[in-house]
Each structure stands twice: as C-alpha cells, then as structure tokens.
Amino acid sequence: MQQQSAQLRWEQNTQRPLFGLALAFAVAYAVPIVRPDASRDVVEVCTAVEWVVWGAFALDYFIRLALAEQRMAFVRTHWLDLASVLLPLLQPMRLLRLVSTLLLVGQRARMASQIRLSTYVGGAVVGLLMFGSLAVLSVERDSPDGNIRTLGDAVWWSFTTMTTVGYGDHSPTTGLGRMLAVGLMLSGIALLGVVTANIAAWFIARFEKDDVEERRQTEAIRVLTEEVRALRGEVAALKGTSVE
Image 1: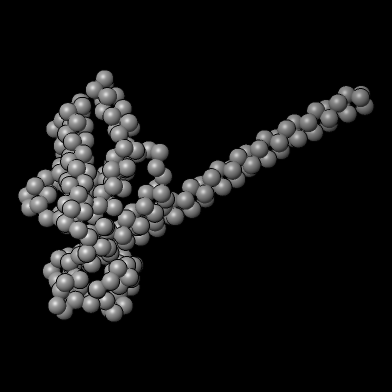
Image 2: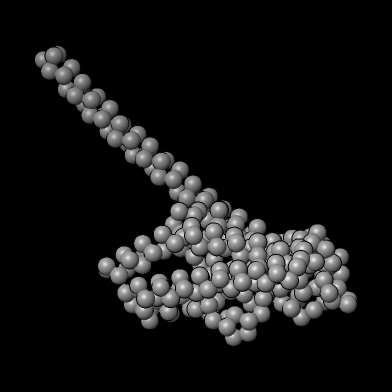
C-alpha cells in the first residue's frame, strides 16, 4: 500500500512537468518541418530535444514500474506504454518517436483525474490535427507525385481525413503517408465514438436524475395524501365526539 501511494504521488507530481516536456517536443518536431531551410544546428537541437522528451517519458514508465506493488500486473495493464517506450529503439525513425511520444502522453493524460473528458478529447483532436499535418507534410512534400506541399494543404487534408469526409483534393502518395491516413481515420472514428458516448451518458444521467426527482415528488405526494386522510379521520372523529 505504501509503494502504491508512492506511485500515485509520483504520477501526480510529474504530471505537469511531463506535459511541459510534451509541448517542447511539439515545438522541436514542428520547427524543422515548418522551416525546411533551418540550419543544421537548429535541426540537431530539435532532434536532441525529441530524444530527451522521449527519454523522460521512458524513465517515467520505469520509475512507475519500480514503484508498483505488483510489477507484472503493471506491465500487463500498461503494455501500450512499454510498446511506446521500445518502439523508437527498434528503428529510430523520427516518425516512430512522434508516435511513441504521442502514445505516452495520451496514457499519462488519461491517468490525470483532474483532466475532464471534454478537455482530453479537445486536446487529442488538436494534437492529432497538428501532428498529423506535420507528419504527412514531412513525408509527402518531397514525393515526386505528392500533392501535399504546404502546411495549409496538410492541415486541410488532416481535417478532412479525421472527419472521414475525404474530399480527395489532397491525398498521400507514399506508403508512410497512407499509414498516417489510416491512423488519422481510425483516431477520428474513435474520438467521434468517445464524444457520442459522452453525450449519450450525459442524457442518460440527466433522465435518471429527472426520474429520481419525479419519484421523490410522487412519494412526497403520497405521504401528504395519507396525512390528509389521517387528518380527515381525526376531524371526523372529533365531530362525532362533539355531537354525542
């Protein structure tokens, strides 16, 4: 129990610093893509920041594993975290660092009790749009047959892909670009399902609350009716006594 409390304290104390590092990762990932003419020093600094942020999230996973009371159970229930930690090591591609860091940030966000579902969904939508646009621009811009050349094209494509509209005016032509498209489409469907389920749960809770209030009022009316009947009986008894 003491180890579990230590784990919970660690997760609470590191929540904000890790999100701050996630923002630093977002900037470091975006700069070389938005500014392809950036100097080599800038690119190397951004790459170093990406690895440092990923390393911080990986270290966070192993510390939580060490603080867990049942470590095997922790590994089984946090298998996606472990996969995200190992993914860039298997093949250190920039896109894999992006995917693994997003997964780790998402896992930590879901554990934060102070973050409401609407905030999480909104952040997920913005994050997927931003990183999806940057990722597809980085892999499609230099493609000979590519039609996603600017950041505006990439953002428009990400938006239509996530909403599953798919106008077709912009589409990826590379293998990685199409993999990104599949990921965005599945993420869009999943987020839409979360939003729909949240709205449905709100309506159900509202109806249940109204139903409870209606039952309470019905019970109050029933009790009041019985009291009136009892009072009528007492009045009738008093009248009968006075007549005698």
